[in-house]
Amino acid sequence: MNKSSSNPYTASLWLITLFFLVLCVKKRIASCKGVVTLMNTMGRHVIAELKDCNLEKLIDMQYMERVFVDAALEAGAEVREVVFHKFAPYGISGVVIISESHLTIHSFPEHKYASIDIYTCGDLDPHVAANYIMGSLEAKSTQSLELSRGIGPIKINQ
Image 1: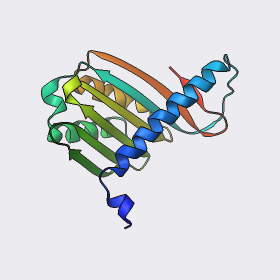
Image 2: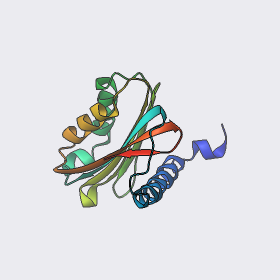
Image 3: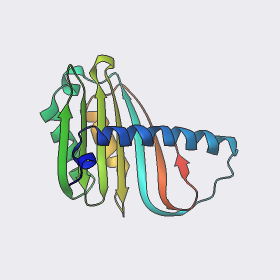
Image 4: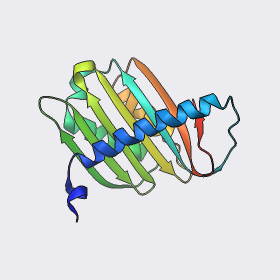
């Protein structure tokens, strides 16, 4: 195992990079005024903002782990590995690796906010897992988008 894969911050940095990539792609596609074509999809990627979540649930790492594993199972995924980390003074980042890809979260309890992303390949619907998580964290406001991933131009579904 190399040092970068054992670093607990590697997943966080990867997700932050992905977030900014999505923002850049979204702006570029929006400027194309709908000239985006469909592509051969290898996977579906849901990225969601969860606001005004239940604070007690956002700070409970065991609860978060259980919710994410249950969300994966609810979507029909096969869970491979589960890694969650609690930050001081607060905040949790976690990933559930599934045979079909992954589910991740970064929580910011001081803002009652969490960002999640669910990436699935095959016939799994990532919205099943995303909706399960949103309900379990009692998010009062949510916003999400779906990226079709694969060969060809990226297609964003909102």
